[in-house]
Length: 407
Image (cartoon, rainbow, N blue to C red; front, side, top):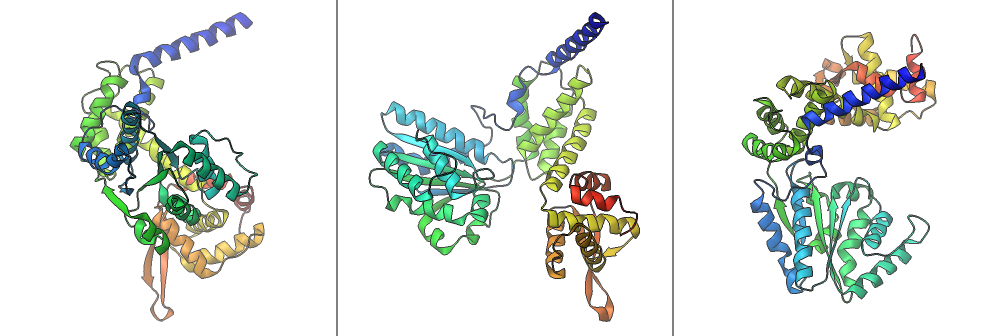
């Protein structure tokens, strides 16, 4: 019996592993972290960035830089590639040059920023426990001892600023405390209006240059995918039309190369799991559904409990009536809060949360006139109700609401 089961397991392993060698030759080149040696259609941005950073090879400190552009337009890849090459060039000239890269979705407090900077120049500090001023002094002294230029890359800098504006202010003012070394900042953001939101103190300290990355066209995305597919797949596994379809979808998504690459990778993985020997347009269409579903779930999962309570009110309201308004939502939301002992927000604040859900594309909120009773909004879910329920049921308190026949 045991031998038979073992044989079955071995057979499954052999079949799956064999299928995985038929499609991919190197799947890593389709992942977000892979940076190719050559970035198609970004030579102009590469040159812009090199020109701004060039003073570092002559012993000077370059200007701070803000890099703007929608998701998947090559901002991070170009920046990493330029800094990597700049570091090699500095070493060849016997110059000191260091850089740090931080994703501000994760490094989002002044303490985390500083501990990351310390780590990148070889200073060990605990993740928590030390006073911020102590860590700051350690970093300042260590950096000065290196007599170097340090470029600090803050990817998604708007995320850091929204949670800890002081972090950015401290970095912009650090040069006034340094004696032998200098710091330059590269801020990367999708928000073209980010600079307008900055505190005047920070704006005046930045003295920044700007580089804007425009979205890729479908033709440019096709070139990017073709470059990767030559390495990623065995010859002949992609059917005609697959690259064009992935490129077209990415172009529709604001010229997003990341979306095109994800789509191609997931399509190939679906073909692989199905035991197919080639990747077809049908696999791409199925991959679209998988990615869109995963994106919706990810967004819904990260919503705060108050926003989820509002969303549950909308979900329940739609189940009761073909048309619900902000007033209906607020009434249901208030009942939910009472039942699960959650603080009840004001109608105005709930209206703000509905607007946020609208901006995220989870609901539509259309203004309607109610005559002498003023104006309201007609609310409608734009994502599949089953996905909304799936996420809300992960919240223990909200699960109890679904178990009630009527609220």
